Length: 597
Image 1: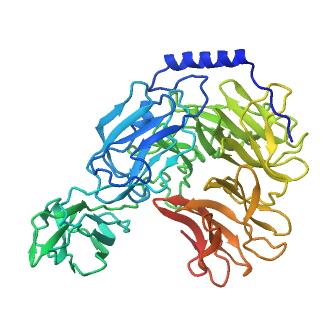
Image 2: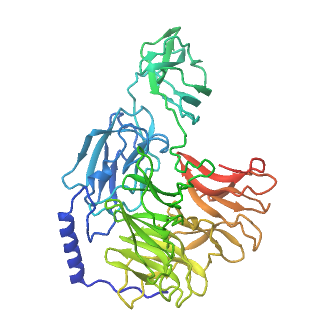
């Protein structure tokens, strides 16, 4: 075990607090603030609360934090689209889309700790909604929220705006990605009072209350139909159609007021053709949102520039913002992270691979030169924690170890593998307010944790082995998936005892094997690409059939399941698991179509 760092004296602590308070008081709410406040803010309460029922459809949304917040980061919610963006998000479909908020309803308390706003339109009746607070929410010193908040069950609204004898809602998700075309299932929510109703009639509409002229019903349903849904085949949206309308039918008479929903049109298209060579792509990669823009690595194929840093504001053509490696050479910026209102990343300038900083205000890039003298520090695992930027890097004679950067400079936190040998740090992940990672101290490769307290010179940091009962035997292709926080536990792939490499977890006190998927002594399932989705942990693993497929683990039932045998006669090799728009996206091969999405 490492010796813990000495604490601050009471007098120095008071001085730091007072100085930090002065800087916050003098800072502006809408700009980058130089501050000694490096502590992350936390949410305190939300309204409506999780699991509440009967919430009025015209409710307001309120969130409260434990310190003053930057208003600009809270009020950045979507106001005219259904995109899930900004510091506070409200959704009825697990954040595939989000409710638009009314900008004019926004209110903030005098201490800037409580925020209230309302949806653009009343919510749907008898519908479950979830509220999310993202780490886009920042305090006045621009420290991000400590962990995102998301309701577990959500709140349920009461009776909606529709009369009890009207259908209470229409659900439709467009699965066709061509513009002006739709495909999907229309679902109708029954009326509360069906006493006199004999059925429902579904129509195209050119407004929330008017049928599209000349169009017959899309479908009619008898009230006895247990499934009020209709599968719409891939088709063009009729001209001037903007809504789906559902009329309750009593006897043979349609009631005058319909229930309506606007027709979504999901569109997938090439946003910009950066490399117009025709035979080569721009290979965009390592996407990061910073300063309201999308930053990424790409090449336009010109004779003057290789793969460099680009930005895109969603409206104007993408622009190259740096030329770190002169000429046609690739600087290939990667491992991007936003810290203290600047973008940090690893890049090669033609001589060395170093940590770089890009400031969008000055539109300039600077080499932080962690290992001076033209030698590469090769930084990786960039992670913001406890007000500092942490990363692995090589410096001088210590090999690649844990480093930090903040407003006071940079330095090595600790030489975990003492001497010139690298400790091989991978998988930095924040769990229970500590930084966890895999490292080798010369005895073995184990999970480690660090509380983020920077040590004085000649004093070791508060870095400890988490457990020596398991060893991290292999690192996935993408080390960022080595550890994954799921249901208040830290899960990882490790070897312990005679079970081979299997799925393990650490709950803050003890570590245990979660599942022995390849249930043969010394044989390994080697779980990788750990990703949480819909309340379960998904990953790629191999079982006794010797095939690598997609698996899931449910911590509530403590059970594992092969999701699908995608390639029955061989391995499908699922990789790059990513949650996007309510779906789990990954690459795999079914043995017929090659490796596809």
